[in-house]
Image 1 (cartoon, helix red, strand yellow):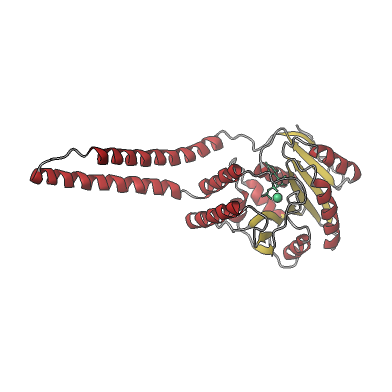
Image 2 (cartoon, rainbow, N blue to C red):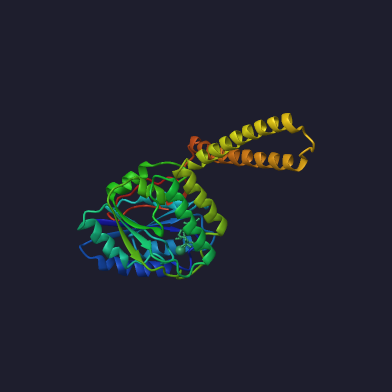
Length: 322
Ligand code: UDP
Ligand code: MG
């Protein structure tokens, strides 16, 4: 019988988890085809009672497994941990807040088993209920990154998706520290089917993404999937250099012919400022890439596990390391 792993990253989801569990269980029952399920809850260093809720679920349902991080490592790390931990023939990634409609699971499963896809992913067609400024920045981000990166990042794509074992293994092989899943999923290739749905509001609790967290995340995405910013800064630098050569020539000739009646103090300051700004900007871009390289070369693990309950559905006890 095929086993489907449901991976759920949780960060302070005490309020949402019980709802999620009930909805997910009934949606899973509807898939049919003798599919067995396991839940892999990844507690991303929650400060509230998330772990208590998860342990409660575990006590009543042996299909529930969990990993708990020693601190908040971010959703990307939680996704990575869940994918590495799950043992199913199929795996699905879902948010704990029911913004990823469990009703889609059935269609996703059908896409994988009947249509021969390796991945079925959800894409929201609108951003209803989201602050307008956040939607605006999101749209700009997708436009920019798709212009400058060769890996396609689909606008509105969620992390909500179902994958075959082959696909999961390929994603796990990518062990980079600065993870940007939307890019990784697209980069590994395979046949992906997109399912569209309308955005749903959170069932309980608050979003864990502040504007800054999202801004940093989008920069991570751009830096990880494109080296175009490096080219831009080099090109701008070159342009300025050529422009200054022309200007020097122009002033040289002008002085020879008409002399130098006025000392151009203001324009001088302006140009110094401009060139200085461009230099700093370029150094900054370089620095960003260097910082990413620096973090990668440290080869730090993406997360640290403090606690886990990981015997799987078939009762097989997995190694306990904390
Ligand atoms: N999440 C996480 N670690 C974090 C932030 C979020 O594991 O540092 C989880 C969170 O618990 C939820 C999912 O990622 O299950 C999506 O988070 P959220 O709903 O806050 O994001 P949004 O839907 O607003 O984009
Ligand atoms: Mg959400």
